[in-house]
Length: 256
Length: 274
Image: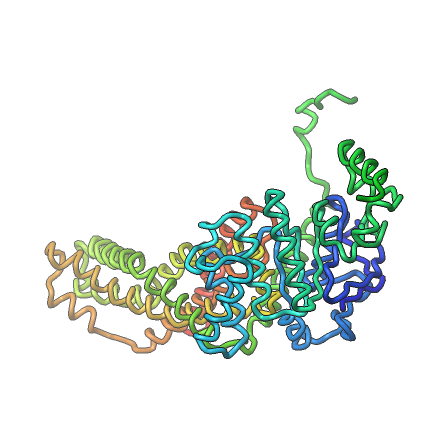
Protein backbone atom coordinates (compact mmCIF):
# COMPACT_ATOMS: atom_id res chain seq x y z
CA UNK A 1 0.00 0.00 0.00
CA UNK A 2 1.09 3.57 -0.66
CA UNK A 3 0.03 6.36 1.65
CA UNK A 4 0.53 10.10 1.43
CA UNK A 5 0.44 12.36 4.44
CA UNK A 6 -0.23 16.10 4.15
CA UNK A 7 1.72 16.26 0.90
CA UNK A 8 2.48 19.80 -0.17
CA UNK A 9 4.37 20.81 -3.29
CA UNK A 10 5.16 24.36 -4.27
CA UNK A 11 7.08 25.69 -7.26
CA UNK A 12 8.28 29.13 -6.26
CA UNK A 13 5.22 31.07 -5.12
CA UNK A 14 2.77 28.63 -6.68
CA UNK A 15 1.51 25.85 -4.45
CA UNK A 16 0.42 23.03 -6.72
CA UNK A 17 -0.54 20.46 -4.08
CA UNK A 18 -2.07 21.69 -0.83
CA UNK A 19 -1.86 18.89 1.68
CA UNK A 20 -2.83 15.63 0.01
CA UNK A 21 -3.58 12.78 2.43
CA UNK A 22 -4.76 9.59 0.79
CA UNK A 23 -4.15 5.88 0.37
CA UNK A 24 -3.59 3.68 -2.67
CA UNK A 25 -4.51 0.03 -2.17
CA UNK A 26 -2.91 -3.17 -3.51
CA UNK A 27 -4.89 -5.22 -6.01
CA UNK A 28 -6.92 -2.16 -6.97
CA UNK A 29 -6.70 0.38 -9.75
CA UNK A 30 -6.31 3.66 -7.89
CA UNK A 31 -7.18 6.66 -10.05
CA UNK A 32 -6.08 10.24 -9.68
CA UNK A 33 -8.43 12.33 -11.78
CA UNK A 34 -8.84 16.02 -12.37
CA UNK A 35 -8.70 18.73 -14.98
CA UNK A 36 -5.47 19.76 -16.65
CA UNK A 37 -3.34 21.71 -14.20
CA UNK A 38 -5.04 20.20 -11.14
CA UNK A 39 -1.75 18.70 -9.95
CA UNK A 40 -2.21 15.06 -11.04
CA UNK A 41 1.17 14.65 -12.72
CA UNK A 42 2.95 16.48 -9.89
CA UNK A 43 1.35 14.09 -7.38
CA UNK A 44 2.36 11.08 -9.47
CA UNK A 45 5.93 12.35 -9.79
CA UNK A 46 6.05 12.92 -6.05
CA UNK A 47 4.88 9.38 -5.45
CA UNK A 48 7.72 7.94 -7.55
CA UNK A 49 10.29 10.41 -6.20
CA UNK A 50 10.90 12.39 -9.38
CA UNK A 51 9.93 15.51 -7.38
CA UNK A 52 10.78 16.29 -3.77
CA UNK A 53 7.81 17.42 -1.65
CA UNK A 54 7.88 20.83 -0.04
CA UNK A 55 6.49 19.08 3.02
CA UNK A 56 4.60 15.90 3.85
CA UNK A 57 5.36 12.23 3.50
CA UNK A 58 4.95 9.34 1.11
CA UNK A 59 4.83 5.89 2.68
CA UNK A 60 5.54 2.68 0.79
CA UNK A 61 4.08 0.22 3.32
CA UNK A 62 6.09 1.14 6.42
CA UNK A 63 8.86 3.04 4.62
CA UNK A 64 8.89 6.82 4.66
CA UNK A 65 10.15 7.19 1.07
CA UNK A 66 11.78 10.59 1.33
CA UNK A 67 13.71 9.81 4.50
CA UNK A 68 15.25 6.61 3.10
CA UNK A 69 18.89 6.43 2.06
CA UNK A 70 19.82 6.04 -1.62
CA UNK A 71 20.24 2.27 -1.35
CA UNK A 72 16.81 1.81 0.20
CA UNK A 73 15.22 4.14 -2.37
CA UNK A 74 16.78 2.10 -5.15
CA UNK A 75 15.49 -1.11 -3.54
CA UNK A 76 11.95 0.31 -3.57
CA UNK A 77 12.33 1.60 -7.10
CA UNK A 78 13.20 -1.88 -8.28
CA UNK A 79 9.69 -2.83 -7.15
CA UNK A 80 8.19 0.02 -9.15
CA UNK A 81 7.06 -0.05 -12.75
CA UNK A 82 5.95 3.03 -14.59
CA UNK A 83 4.10 3.68 -17.80
CA UNK A 84 4.77 7.17 -19.08
CA UNK A 85 2.35 9.37 -20.97
CA UNK A 86 4.56 9.28 -24.07
CA UNK A 87 5.68 5.70 -23.26
CA UNK A 88 9.35 6.80 -22.87
CA UNK A 89 10.58 3.81 -24.85
CA UNK A 90 14.27 3.91 -25.72
CA UNK A 91 13.97 4.65 -29.43
CA UNK A 92 17.34 3.25 -30.44
CA UNK A 93 16.39 -0.14 -28.97
CA UNK A 94 13.99 -2.74 -30.34
CA UNK A 95 10.83 -3.70 -28.49
CA UNK A 96 12.61 -6.75 -27.09
CA UNK A 97 15.63 -4.74 -25.94
CA UNK A 98 13.34 -2.20 -24.29
CA UNK A 99 11.50 -4.85 -22.31
CA UNK A 100 14.75 -6.68 -21.52
CA UNK A 101 16.56 -3.56 -20.27
CA UNK A 102 15.50 -3.85 -16.59
CA UNK A 103 16.42 -7.55 -16.66
CA UNK A 104 19.86 -6.77 -18.12
CA UNK A 105 20.42 -4.08 -15.52
CA UNK A 106 19.19 -5.76 -12.37
CA UNK A 107 19.11 -9.53 -12.72
CA UNK A 108 21.60 -12.31 -13.22
CA UNK A 109 19.26 -14.31 -15.44
CA UNK A 110 20.75 -16.27 -18.31
CA UNK A 111 20.04 -15.10 -21.85
CA UNK A 112 17.50 -17.89 -22.21
CA UNK A 113 15.70 -16.94 -19.01
CA UNK A 114 15.59 -13.31 -20.07
CA UNK A 115 14.22 -14.24 -23.49
CA UNK A 116 11.51 -16.36 -21.87
CA UNK A 117 10.54 -13.58 -19.47
CA UNK A 118 10.44 -10.99 -22.27
CA UNK A 119 8.35 -13.25 -24.49
CA UNK A 120 5.91 -13.95 -21.69
CA UNK A 121 5.51 -10.22 -20.95
CA UNK A 122 5.02 -9.40 -24.61
CA UNK A 123 2.50 -12.22 -24.87
CA UNK A 124 0.69 -10.83 -21.80
CA UNK A 125 0.23 -7.51 -23.60
CA UNK A 126 -0.68 -9.25 -26.88
CA UNK A 127 2.50 -8.27 -28.68
CA UNK A 128 4.00 -11.66 -29.44
CA UNK A 129 6.21 -11.45 -32.49
CA UNK A 130 6.88 -7.72 -32.21
CA UNK A 131 10.29 -8.32 -30.62
CA UNK A 132 12.40 -7.01 -33.50
CA UNK A 133 10.39 -3.86 -34.18
CA UNK A 134 11.63 -0.43 -33.16
CA UNK A 135 9.27 1.88 -31.25
CA UNK A 136 9.04 4.14 -34.31
CA UNK A 137 7.64 1.19 -36.28
CA UNK A 138 4.77 0.63 -33.84
CA UNK A 139 1.46 2.42 -33.24
CA UNK A 140 0.68 4.55 -30.17
CA UNK A 141 -1.35 1.73 -28.63
CA UNK A 142 1.45 -0.76 -29.23
CA UNK A 143 3.95 1.61 -27.64
CA UNK A 144 1.76 1.82 -24.55
CA UNK A 145 1.63 -1.97 -24.39
CA UNK A 146 5.41 -2.21 -24.78
CA UNK A 147 5.64 0.33 -21.96
CA UNK A 148 3.40 -1.87 -19.81
CA UNK A 149 5.47 -4.96 -20.68
CA UNK A 150 8.65 -3.13 -19.66
CA UNK A 151 6.97 -1.91 -16.47
CA UNK A 152 5.92 -5.40 -15.38
CA UNK A 153 8.98 -7.37 -16.48
CA UNK A 154 10.56 -7.22 -13.01
CA UNK A 155 7.22 -8.20 -11.44
CA UNK A 156 6.73 -4.91 -9.59
CA UNK A 157 4.63 -4.41 -6.47
CA UNK A 158 3.72 -0.89 -7.52
CA UNK A 159 2.65 0.27 -10.97
CA UNK A 160 2.26 3.92 -11.94
CA UNK A 161 0.58 5.00 -15.15
CA UNK A 162 0.68 8.59 -16.31
CA UNK A 163 -2.22 9.26 -18.68
CA UNK A 164 -2.18 5.75 -20.19
CA UNK A 165 -4.95 6.62 -22.65
CA UNK A 166 -3.72 9.94 -23.96
CA UNK A 167 -3.54 9.99 -27.73
CA UNK A 168 -5.38 6.68 -28.12
CA UNK A 169 -8.72 5.98 -29.75
CA UNK A 170 -11.57 4.91 -27.41
CA UNK A 171 -11.35 1.24 -28.39
CA UNK A 172 -7.61 1.02 -27.80
CA UNK A 173 -8.06 2.94 -24.54
CA UNK A 174 -10.43 0.26 -23.30
CA UNK A 175 -7.89 -2.44 -24.23
CA UNK A 176 -5.16 -0.63 -22.27
CA UNK A 177 -7.47 -0.06 -19.29
CA UNK A 178 -8.49 -3.69 -19.17
CA UNK A 179 -4.90 -4.81 -19.48
CA UNK A 180 -3.82 -2.63 -16.57
CA UNK A 181 -6.73 -3.76 -14.42
CA UNK A 182 -6.12 -7.46 -15.17
CA UNK A 183 -2.40 -7.17 -14.40
CA UNK A 184 -3.22 -5.33 -11.17
CA UNK A 185 -5.62 -7.99 -9.96
CA UNK A 186 -3.54 -10.97 -11.14
CA UNK A 187 -0.40 -9.80 -9.36
CA UNK A 188 -1.98 -7.88 -6.46
CA UNK A 189 -0.11 -4.74 -7.57
CA UNK A 190 -0.76 -1.30 -6.12
CA UNK A 191 -1.60 0.53 -9.31
CA UNK A 192 -1.90 4.30 -9.43
CA UNK A 193 -3.27 5.79 -12.63
CA UNK A 194 -3.33 9.44 -13.45
CA UNK A 195 -6.06 10.09 -15.99
CA UNK A 196 -8.75 12.41 -17.22
CA UNK A 197 -10.38 9.76 -19.35
CA UNK A 198 -14.01 9.33 -18.37
CA UNK A 199 -14.21 5.75 -19.63
CA UNK A 200 -11.32 4.77 -17.37
CA UNK A 201 -13.07 6.33 -14.40
CA UNK A 202 -16.29 4.45 -15.04
CA UNK A 203 -14.68 1.13 -15.96
CA UNK A 204 -11.64 0.63 -13.73
CA UNK A 205 -11.99 3.20 -10.94
CA UNK A 206 -11.72 0.98 -7.85
CA UNK A 207 -10.47 3.88 -5.76
CA UNK A 208 -10.70 7.39 -7.13
CA UNK A 209 -9.52 10.76 -5.91
CA UNK A 210 -10.51 13.93 -7.72
CA UNK A 211 -8.01 16.74 -7.53
CA UNK A 212 -9.21 20.30 -7.86
CA UNK A 213 -6.74 23.17 -7.55
CA UNK A 214 -4.29 21.03 -5.62
CA UNK A 215 -6.76 19.59 -3.13
CA UNK A 216 -8.83 16.43 -2.98
CA UNK A 217 -12.32 17.54 -3.96
CA UNK A 218 -13.91 14.10 -3.94
CA UNK A 219 -13.02 10.49 -3.24
CA UNK A 220 -14.91 7.29 -3.91
CA UNK A 221 -15.17 4.56 -6.55
CA UNK A 222 -16.72 4.05 -9.98
CA UNK A 223 -20.03 2.90 -8.49
CA UNK A 224 -20.42 6.14 -6.57
CA UNK A 225 -19.64 8.47 -9.46
CA UNK A 226 -23.07 8.47 -11.06
CA UNK A 227 -25.02 9.19 -7.92
CA UNK A 228 -22.64 11.58 -6.26
CA UNK A 229 -23.87 15.15 -6.13
CA UNK A 230 -20.37 16.54 -5.76
CA UNK A 231 -20.31 19.59 -7.97
CA UNK A 232 -16.63 19.31 -8.90
CA UNK A 233 -17.00 15.64 -9.82
CA UNK A 234 -20.11 16.17 -11.94
CA UNK A 235 -18.54 19.15 -13.71
CA UNK A 236 -15.51 17.05 -14.52
CA UNK A 237 -16.99 13.66 -15.44
CA UNK A 238 -20.18 14.85 -17.11
CA UNK A 239 -18.69 17.93 -18.65
CA UNK A 240 -20.76 18.12 -21.84
CA UNK A 241 -24.56 18.59 -22.12
CA UNK A 242 -24.73 15.22 -23.90
CA UNK A 243 -23.09 13.42 -20.98
CA UNK A 244 -25.26 15.31 -18.51
CA UNK A 245 -28.38 14.06 -20.36
CA UNK A 246 -26.96 10.54 -20.30
CA UNK A 247 -26.45 10.81 -16.56
CA UNK A 248 -30.02 12.00 -16.03
CA UNK A 249 -31.34 9.10 -18.09
CA UNK A 250 -29.17 6.62 -16.24
CA UNK A 251 -30.35 7.94 -12.90
CA UNK A 252 -33.95 7.80 -14.11
CA UNK A 253 -33.38 4.14 -15.01
CA UNK A 254 -32.03 3.37 -11.57
CA UNK A 255 -28.35 3.74 -12.45
CA UNK A 256 -28.44 1.26 -15.35
CA UNK B 1 -0.44 56.69 -21.76
CA UNK B 2 -1.91 53.41 -22.98
CA UNK B 3 -1.65 52.59 -26.66
CA UNK B 4 1.13 55.04 -27.49
CA UNK B 5 4.71 54.10 -28.18
CA UNK B 6 7.36 56.03 -26.25
CA UNK B 7 9.56 58.37 -28.23
CA UNK B 8 12.74 56.49 -29.11
CA UNK B 9 14.82 59.60 -28.44
CA UNK B 10 13.80 59.26 -24.80
CA UNK B 11 16.26 56.35 -24.56
CA UNK B 12 19.09 58.04 -26.41
CA UNK B 13 21.02 58.91 -23.29
CA UNK B 14 19.83 55.99 -21.23
CA UNK B 15 22.48 54.41 -18.98
CA UNK B 16 21.83 51.34 -16.88
CA UNK B 17 21.69 52.49 -13.24
CA UNK B 18 24.81 51.61 -11.31
CA UNK B 19 22.89 49.79 -8.57
CA UNK B 20 21.34 47.42 -11.15
CA UNK B 21 24.68 46.54 -12.74
CA UNK B 22 25.82 45.40 -9.29
CA UNK B 23 22.71 43.28 -8.93
CA UNK B 24 23.33 41.79 -12.37
CA UNK B 25 26.93 40.99 -11.56
CA UNK B 26 25.90 39.28 -8.32
CA UNK B 27 23.25 37.31 -10.17
CA UNK B 28 25.71 36.21 -12.85
CA UNK B 29 28.29 35.13 -10.27
CA UNK B 30 25.66 33.33 -8.20
CA UNK B 31 24.38 31.54 -11.27
CA UNK B 32 27.90 30.62 -12.34
CA UNK B 33 28.74 29.23 -8.89
CA UNK B 34 25.45 27.36 -8.92
CA UNK B 35 26.42 25.69 -12.20
CA UNK B 36 29.87 24.82 -10.87
CA UNK B 37 28.36 23.30 -7.73
CA UNK B 38 25.80 21.30 -9.67
CA UNK B 39 28.48 20.13 -12.13
CA UNK B 40 30.60 18.68 -9.33
CA UNK B 41 27.51 17.26 -7.64
CA UNK B 42 26.64 15.46 -10.87
CA UNK B 43 30.16 14.08 -11.16
CA UNK B 44 29.97 12.98 -7.52
CA UNK B 45 26.74 11.08 -8.22
CA UNK B 46 28.23 9.61 -11.38
CA UNK B 47 31.10 8.05 -9.47
CA UNK B 48 29.30 5.07 -8.03
CA UNK B 49 29.42 1.31 -8.05
CA UNK B 50 27.74 0.09 -11.25
CA UNK B 51 24.45 -1.75 -10.86
CA UNK B 52 25.63 -4.25 -13.45
CA UNK B 53 29.25 -4.20 -14.60
CA UNK B 54 28.50 -5.88 -17.93
CA UNK B 55 26.00 -3.15 -18.89
CA UNK B 56 28.53 -0.43 -18.10
CA UNK B 57 31.23 -2.31 -19.99
CA UNK B 58 28.99 -2.63 -23.04
CA UNK B 59 28.08 1.05 -22.90
CA UNK B 60 31.74 2.04 -22.50
CA UNK B 61 32.66 -0.02 -25.58
CA UNK B 62 29.90 1.70 -27.54
CA UNK B 63 31.15 5.10 -26.48
CA UNK B 64 34.76 4.20 -27.32
CA UNK B 65 33.60 3.23 -30.78
CA UNK B 66 31.50 6.39 -31.22
CA UNK B 67 34.08 8.79 -29.81
CA UNK B 68 37.24 7.09 -31.05
CA UNK B 69 36.54 5.25 -34.27
CA UNK B 70 33.78 7.70 -35.21
CA UNK B 71 36.14 10.66 -34.99
CA UNK B 72 39.19 9.09 -36.60
CA UNK B 73 38.60 10.40 -40.13
CA UNK B 74 38.01 14.02 -39.14
CA UNK B 75 40.96 13.98 -36.73
CA UNK B 76 43.32 12.54 -39.36
CA UNK B 77 42.10 14.99 -41.98
CA UNK B 78 42.60 17.99 -39.73
CA UNK B 79 45.98 16.71 -38.50
CA UNK B 80 47.30 16.34 -42.05
CA UNK B 81 46.44 19.93 -42.84
CA UNK B 82 47.74 21.27 -39.52
CA UNK B 83 51.12 19.64 -40.21
CA UNK B 84 51.11 20.74 -43.83
CA UNK B 85 50.21 24.36 -43.09
CA UNK B 86 52.73 24.60 -40.22
CA UNK B 87 55.49 23.26 -42.47
CA UNK B 88 54.67 25.44 -45.47
CA UNK B 89 54.33 28.61 -43.41
CA UNK B 90 57.52 27.96 -41.52
CA UNK B 91 59.31 27.26 -44.78
CA UNK B 92 58.00 30.61 -46.05
CA UNK B 93 59.35 32.38 -42.96
CA UNK B 94 62.74 30.71 -43.36
CA UNK B 95 63.13 32.01 -46.90
CA UNK B 96 66.26 34.17 -47.25
CA UNK B 97 67.26 33.53 -43.65
CA UNK B 98 70.27 31.82 -42.14
CA UNK B 99 68.18 29.34 -40.13
CA UNK B 100 68.86 25.81 -41.36
CA UNK B 101 65.95 24.38 -43.31
CA UNK B 102 65.86 21.15 -41.30
CA UNK B 103 64.31 23.31 -38.59
CA UNK B 104 61.04 22.91 -40.51
CA UNK B 105 60.82 19.26 -39.39
CA UNK B 106 61.87 20.19 -35.87
CA UNK B 107 59.25 22.94 -35.54
CA UNK B 108 56.45 20.85 -37.07
CA UNK B 109 57.24 18.01 -34.65
CA UNK B 110 57.36 20.13 -31.50
CA UNK B 111 54.42 22.42 -32.25
CA UNK B 112 52.18 19.50 -33.09
CA UNK B 113 53.22 17.37 -30.13
CA UNK B 114 53.14 20.12 -27.52
CA UNK B 115 50.27 22.23 -28.75
CA UNK B 116 48.50 21.61 -32.02
CA UNK B 117 47.75 17.89 -31.82
CA UNK B 118 46.17 17.90 -28.35
CA UNK B 119 44.55 21.33 -28.48
CA UNK B 120 43.21 21.48 -32.03
CA UNK B 121 42.14 17.83 -31.95
CA UNK B 122 40.26 18.35 -28.69
CA UNK B 123 38.68 21.61 -29.86
CA UNK B 124 37.42 19.75 -32.90
CA UNK B 125 36.25 16.84 -30.74
CA UNK B 126 34.49 19.27 -28.41
CA UNK B 127 32.49 20.35 -31.44
CA UNK B 128 31.83 16.91 -32.85
CA UNK B 129 31.57 14.73 -29.75
CA UNK B 130 30.50 17.42 -27.28
CA UNK B 131 27.47 18.61 -29.20
CA UNK B 132 26.52 15.00 -29.86
CA UNK B 133 26.68 14.04 -26.18
CA UNK B 134 24.70 17.10 -25.08
CA UNK B 135 22.04 16.41 -27.71
CA UNK B 136 21.88 12.71 -26.84
CA UNK B 137 21.42 13.28 -23.10
CA UNK B 138 19.18 16.30 -23.62
CA UNK B 139 16.97 14.27 -25.95
CA UNK B 140 16.78 11.48 -23.38
CA UNK B 141 15.82 14.00 -20.70
CA UNK B 142 13.09 15.51 -22.86
CA UNK B 143 11.66 12.15 -23.91
CA UNK B 144 11.57 11.07 -20.23
CA UNK B 145 14.07 8.27 -20.88
CA UNK B 146 16.17 9.46 -17.95
CA UNK B 147 13.10 9.59 -15.68
CA UNK B 148 12.16 6.08 -16.82
CA UNK B 149 15.61 4.77 -15.92
CA UNK B 150 15.59 6.61 -12.56
CA UNK B 151 12.27 5.01 -11.65
CA UNK B 152 13.66 1.59 -12.55
CA UNK B 153 16.38 2.25 -9.97
CA UNK B 154 19.22 3.02 -12.38
CA UNK B 155 21.78 5.61 -11.26
CA UNK B 156 21.40 7.57 -14.49
CA UNK B 157 24.24 9.97 -13.74
CA UNK B 158 26.54 7.01 -13.47
CA UNK B 159 25.16 4.83 -16.26
CA UNK B 160 24.80 7.60 -18.81
CA UNK B 161 27.86 9.72 -18.01
CA UNK B 162 30.66 7.52 -16.69
CA UNK B 163 30.95 5.31 -19.79
CA UNK B 164 31.23 8.45 -21.93
CA UNK B 165 33.99 9.92 -19.78
CA UNK B 166 35.88 6.64 -19.52
CA UNK B 167 35.48 6.04 -23.25
CA UNK B 168 36.89 9.49 -23.99
CA UNK B 169 39.73 9.13 -21.48
CA UNK B 170 40.82 6.00 -23.33
CA UNK B 171 40.20 7.07 -26.92
CA UNK B 172 41.06 10.78 -27.01
CA UNK B 173 44.74 10.31 -26.03
CA UNK B 174 44.97 7.69 -28.80
CA UNK B 175 43.43 10.11 -31.28
CA UNK B 176 45.81 12.84 -30.15
CA UNK B 177 48.80 10.52 -30.60
CA UNK B 178 47.58 9.61 -34.08
CA UNK B 179 47.02 13.31 -34.84
CA UNK B 180 50.60 14.15 -33.79
CA UNK B 181 52.02 11.42 -35.99
CA UNK B 182 49.83 12.34 -38.95
CA UNK B 183 50.68 16.04 -38.57
CA UNK B 184 54.38 15.31 -38.87
CA UNK B 185 53.55 13.21 -41.91
CA UNK B 186 51.44 16.09 -43.29
CA UNK B 187 54.38 18.44 -42.90
CA UNK B 188 56.51 15.99 -44.87
CA UNK B 189 53.93 15.63 -47.66
CA UNK B 190 53.59 19.40 -48.00
CA UNK B 191 57.28 20.20 -48.18
CA UNK B 192 59.42 17.30 -49.41
CA UNK B 193 57.65 16.29 -52.67
CA UNK B 194 57.43 19.95 -53.79
CA UNK B 195 61.13 20.57 -53.13
CA UNK B 196 60.87 23.03 -50.23
CA UNK B 197 63.13 20.74 -48.23
CA UNK B 198 64.83 17.40 -48.84
CA UNK B 199 63.84 14.09 -47.28
CA UNK B 200 67.10 13.98 -45.33
CA UNK B 201 66.65 17.52 -43.97
CA UNK B 202 63.09 16.86 -42.83
CA UNK B 203 64.12 13.59 -41.19
CA UNK B 204 67.04 15.33 -39.48
CA UNK B 205 64.71 18.02 -38.16
CA UNK B 206 62.17 15.52 -36.86
CA UNK B 207 64.91 13.56 -35.08
CA UNK B 208 66.87 16.47 -33.64
CA UNK B 209 66.65 17.72 -30.03
CA UNK B 210 63.77 15.46 -29.19
CA UNK B 211 62.54 15.84 -25.59
CA UNK B 212 60.54 12.77 -24.48
CA UNK B 213 58.83 14.87 -21.76
CA UNK B 214 56.91 16.64 -24.52
CA UNK B 215 55.06 13.39 -25.18
CA UNK B 216 54.10 13.26 -21.49
CA UNK B 217 52.88 16.84 -21.76
CA UNK B 218 50.83 15.92 -24.81
CA UNK B 219 49.13 13.07 -22.96
CA UNK B 220 48.50 15.20 -19.86
CA UNK B 221 46.70 17.68 -22.09
CA UNK B 222 44.85 14.91 -23.90
CA UNK B 223 43.54 13.41 -20.64
CA UNK B 224 42.47 16.76 -19.18
CA UNK B 225 40.84 17.88 -22.42
CA UNK B 226 39.10 14.51 -22.84
CA UNK B 227 37.55 14.89 -19.40
CA UNK B 228 36.41 18.44 -20.18
CA UNK B 229 34.98 17.68 -23.61
CA UNK B 230 32.78 14.89 -22.23
CA UNK B 231 31.86 16.02 -18.72
CA UNK B 232 30.82 19.56 -19.67
CA UNK B 233 28.50 18.49 -22.53
CA UNK B 234 27.08 15.70 -20.37
CA UNK B 235 26.27 18.28 -17.70
CA UNK B 236 24.66 20.55 -20.27
CA UNK B 237 22.57 17.74 -21.74
CA UNK B 238 21.64 16.05 -18.47
CA UNK B 239 19.95 19.13 -17.03
CA UNK B 240 18.18 20.35 -20.16
CA UNK B 241 14.75 21.82 -19.52
CA UNK B 242 12.23 22.98 -22.08
CA UNK B 243 12.01 22.10 -25.75
CA UNK B 244 14.03 21.92 -28.92
CA UNK B 245 15.28 25.52 -28.64
CA UNK B 246 16.72 24.81 -25.18
CA UNK B 247 18.23 21.58 -26.49
CA UNK B 248 19.94 23.54 -29.26
CA UNK B 249 21.19 26.07 -26.72
CA UNK B 250 22.50 23.30 -24.47
CA UNK B 251 24.34 21.79 -27.42
CA UNK B 252 25.86 25.16 -28.31
CA UNK B 253 26.76 25.89 -24.68
CA UNK B 254 28.37 22.48 -24.42
CA UNK B 255 30.73 23.31 -27.28
CA UNK B 256 31.39 26.91 -26.23
CA UNK B 257 32.12 26.11 -22.57
CA UNK B 258 34.19 23.05 -23.48
CA UNK B 259 36.28 25.13 -25.89
CA UNK B 260 36.81 27.91 -23.35
CA UNK B 261 37.79 25.43 -20.63
CA UNK B 262 40.12 23.56 -22.99
CA UNK B 263 41.93 26.80 -23.85
CA UNK B 264 42.04 27.85 -20.20
CA UNK B 265 43.47 24.51 -19.09
CA UNK B 266 45.86 24.54 -22.06
CA UNK B 267 47.32 27.70 -20.58
CA UNK B 268 47.33 26.37 -17.02
CA UNK B 269 49.04 23.13 -18.05
CA UNK B 270 51.62 25.13 -19.99
CA UNK B 271 52.30 27.26 -16.91
CA UNK B 272 52.40 24.40 -14.44
CA UNK B 273 54.19 21.71 -16.44
CA UNK B 274 56.71 23.63 -18.52
